[in-house]
Image (tube, rainbow over all chains, first blue to last red; front, side, top):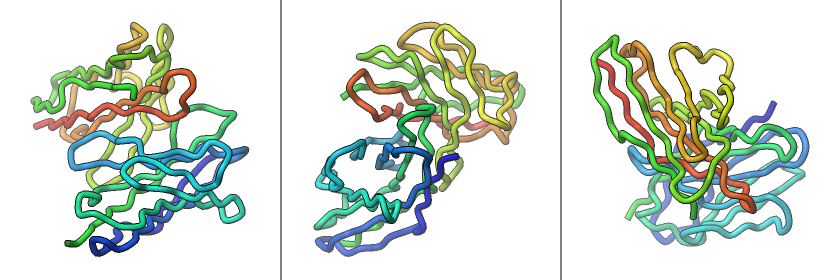
Amino acid sequence: AQSVAQPEDQVNVAEGNPLTVKCTYSVSGNPYLFWYVQYPNRGLQFLLKYITGDNLVKGSYGFEAEFNKSQTSFHLKKPSALVSDSALYFCAVRDSTGRRALTFGSGTRLQVQP
Amino acid sequence: GAVVSQHPSRVICKSGTSVKIECRSLDFQATTMFWYRQFPKKSLMLMATSNEGSKATYEQGVEKDKFLINHASLTLSTLTVTSAHPEDSSFYICSANAPVGHNEQFFGPGTRLTVL
């Protein structure tokens, strides 16, 4: 079975400061990893993915994530946070050989203070 | 990118009625779509996998007769909540596998169901 852990329910950061949203995963085989963002009463917007290749993945809106196989982590980062980044962030995983449904983490609410 | 729409975005119904939610892939064909349910301040829970031209695959604990799924075409999947009750009130989100060459799923905007 595959699983995702997002240990922080909420992350608070001041505007302009760097942010990190943590994610660890468990999956058999090679992982396909994703980050999505959700604004209130909206669906999920794709931010970035890791499939293969470089461990540092760059995505939308200046976000990036680093795949660390030994630590089974895929933390989301941004060098300088914006107030508009405040939202709910989900990490998701699926394996490369099995079913294609995603397994989501519990979500982390990012609050960026002006 | 690929666009997935859902209709309606919001629905309020009386207990005992049935509600149909549509999920459409607007600019690509989706042989597989997924239905998720999201409780307030919670993560998305996969309900079922919708396969075009065949029966849906339901997750453990999801009642097939209550949540009817039909995937009649390559661009449309429907979820019907039958005999809805207040505990069925939730945010329902569909997604579709991206076109060939991608690996992510594209999500619809969600449907807020409130059962009175």
